[in-house]
Length: 408
Length: 150
Ligand SMILES: Cc1ncc(COP(=O)(O)O)c(C=O)c1O
Image (cartoon, rainbow over all chains, first blue to last red; front, side, top):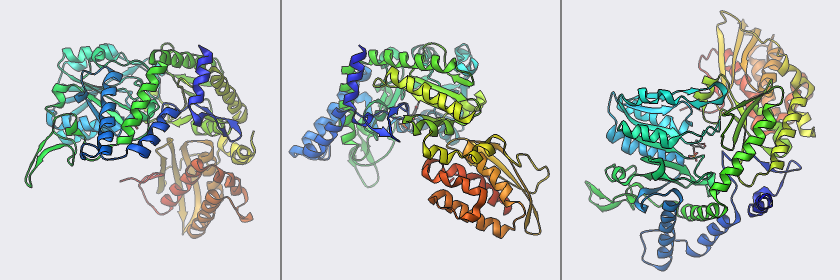
């Protein structure tokens, strides 16, 4: 299979370049992934041939654009095993999806004294929108703790005692972008359901990396971004269970989401169009469709295996070195490895690696409260995708050797 | 190591980041300010003791990358004994050197920071402690940050 993975690299033009004189090793996939030719070509083709606004015209190009935009929605249903296309709302990305749920579902269901349950490992985008909601409604945030020291695992034994109170919604990350922890979302959602609590899964780091089935997970909402799974920036998906979506008030107002408009008031369409005011990211949705097709051709089950293999290699290579502190679970981690080089700040690690063509990320990875809890300010992070190879991991280890020599 | 890297992490920078000078708190100091880089978590407190418009003592504490720490350390050495006006003028020249790369000879040790300009992502690291020092000198209590707040 290995020769296959190397071949796949030819699909990604951006991977084949020198950075500061060295072949690029792109290990910042948790931030965003590179784009395959098929996605780039699809975008270009759309703008060259079919560009028009959607749902408005009856001319040929508008028909084509509308058909392609709605076909992307139908494809998204299949990508995450939703029931029907009315459950798929196109957003700008994970962040907007969460804000939509917080503003629309949250403002209409959460009252003073209610609680919103989060985990201690949430990305800022699955924390700050709930803080805003809590400020506006007088609700309170409660947190499922992270335990296990640097391994960073959810303390699932604490779940029931937290759920059976005044919790209205439980929002949780599927795969932690800073630790690589994979949370047992099906089990968490099942417990929440038994307690009558609505659930939201942040699948930003999982949707492009493993087969995802919202019905099997049993969540009420699930969000992800296109740009983290080979798609363009500016497009993402909010999945919502139909019963919930149809009783939610609009998020933004404008064209395309209305049935009829009077000067005083308007009537709104049902989901999903109720939540897509204004001209959407048409090319983004069409590009995302191409990314879905591409990923499923590669096979997300295979991608997941490959991710885990590379992460295990990097984990082993780093943890055996003196002066390296590795974060995240020892076993069963996703393709994310966060680490600290003793005595060297993560930004210095990243700068030296970059000069060798190795793209890492340094910082708190938008999980500042989690890092405070772990007692660290920042880490360097290597995150993998299916076009990375074991040679990429070797280059990572080499460059960390060099960092240690340089700053010793 | 590549040339650019050697330019960035000069001997003097590495030395000051590993053994920063004036790395202490000044208790009961009236002029204190914080400098924060929310992007990477760099966080410094700068203490300034003024005496008739002259910086009699300056120290700092906190944590961050090699560049910001060395910059803070070199800064405290350079600014001690200077008037507020000449400290500001020096900051102006240091900022120009860090952003554009050409220092003049008068910057002495501080010219070790000239290599930073080849690393746009690191410019903020080098300048952060200076912003905190300026805020402290002017008795501004709020925390300065590399990003603008609401
Ligand atoms: C776990 C997680 N949640 C949310 C986000 C936010 O995604 P976006 O910036 O695409 O909205 C990210 C990515 O940065 C992430 O890793």
